[in-house]
Image (cartoon, rainbow, N blue to C red; front, side, top):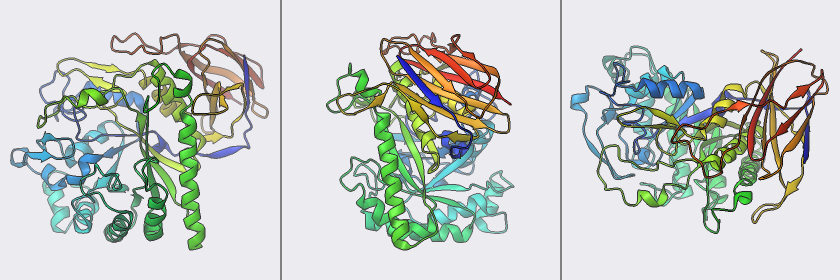
Length: 501
């Protein structure tokens, strides 16, 4: 089986916004407690943060982290998580039916984000709170000094403003599961008025309005139009959420269909872009609304087990999907799909980062282990930099139950002009056959091969609890000045990096 791609330096989709490789931390399950924060753990630093987790997050090179939710957000009082810890209240978390001790709050998150070299994507509660509370949170975080709230921040140990730029106006406000769910008209008005107030405190903010929490919701489309009709001038991004797995009619042995689900992601993105641009045209606006895909991942393994968890615990085991090899292949394809849409998707958050549907897992009394999905995400986040080039690829295709013309070869190329590096990500979705991959570099001149790796050779249901998974050298690469070839193993994720002149 053969596949090819032609790479032309002049055919640029868009510069890559590094925030495309963001992630997400919510006060849910063990994401925070016994995840990133565990005083008394052998690896804990003076602030109670697990340094083994910090090191693993640094490997992923996550530039932005959305916080504090998620469903948790819609009943959260940010004031509960500031000030002396012995004075912070213990609350019922109504979203996940946990006990929230508030021992980890705003200052702890900001300090931890700094340690992992990430900036925050902060969210305000528009479920049970509103305009005033959101504006006050911006004042607390971003106003230099001289007001009650800015001086309170200084009193609580942060002399300099946090200078948070990116803010989410609520979370999944269309979802009936959400505490304080709204109709589109209710949310649109509240979000717009909240945006106005927040921008009066700090007019440099970038604001994300809630789109539909799922394209399967009956209000999908109508929700986007209604929200943007009212909020268009005061927001910069519209959010999207999408998870994948074996759902509904899916057969868990239906691998060919599972690996085609990135086509659904591409259609979803393009559909929402069309909605944004329709509102732009109707308003005769010169402003373009871009997308924040602030929740995405594979999520289906833990659903049944979570119904058995006793409520009102601190940091219970919730949503702890153990990912297998086929999940890593799909995550790789989803990442490439996000890159191919980098002209409009500027922010994306893998949901979530630690323990909860996450690439990083912790043992309460032990160490850290990396899930299968850790590896493709790590490679793309570290090496998918610069610009995304137009995909001139050719590949045999197949049809599955849901999708038509799925390419066996899934590939995307990025070019970093600063380091003169071409990076090619490529996946072979064929279950039994090698793929002979031909790369035509046209106007690029290869100096040398920097690195070639593969993630392959595992059973599709294998996971990495025993730590046996690893990236391995891809030794089949040959190249001349303007051309390269490689043989991609069946069901493999691959990365090839070339220095170019």
